[in-house]
Length: 287
Image 1 (cartoon, one colour):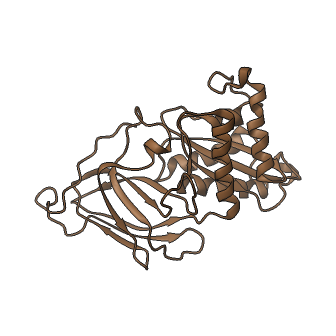
Image 2: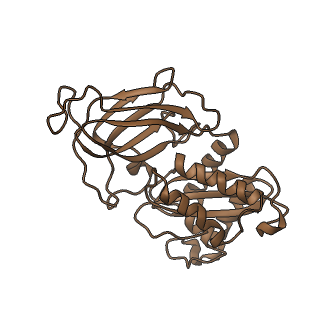
Image 3: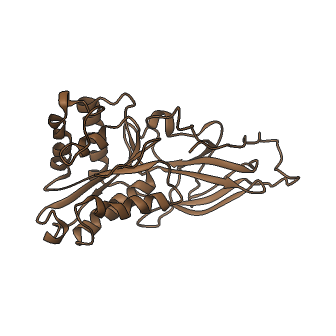
């Protein structure tokens, strides 16, 4: 996944190939469900941290310097300075400290400037429900207190969140099964997305609340010798714990069922809850 990036021009610089555009990156940011404009979001473009050095959101979650930033206007639009042609890492975030408190998903995406410009069009950020925000906090608390990954907190990524929500909704409707094969379409959908960076793994459970589902996943620690996820054999009764504990987990999506899953889903009678985690530099592993 290592990429070669062009340097961003200084404000007084010109474009590439003799072109001197007046703008570099333009776009509009709206909320995923409502379509409402999002004002005050921070748009950052720079170099993507290389995967050989990058573990955990603190290292992977923001473009490296040199980087340029803009803030979205009241109508959700933004404009960044002209760029040299090449590939860049773009993030869009609303929350100043998302590892502590996150209210919107963060968009992470590789983009390419051509003739010094990049027109993104309209991109979306999901507004997190109180359940989703609370769930993320608990996920990070569990990682810190139960499995101790050295790389710290994960954050909610836009593209992982979209697939996690879809996954839970489809389990609700009996459109997918509580199996690795049932998860595969959502793994593939993330992989095919413009924002795919890393490999998706997941955890799915039928339960009465997300707290109970997450408690069951981390309770699988008892099935690992010494509780050590780094040496634990990946199996049906350990895999949820291992996936959610990985040091290579950088960001995630959380999906909450709105109805009891039908018997055809394999977890009938309970609400489905899932987490899709995105790992840097590691082979995809299923739930």
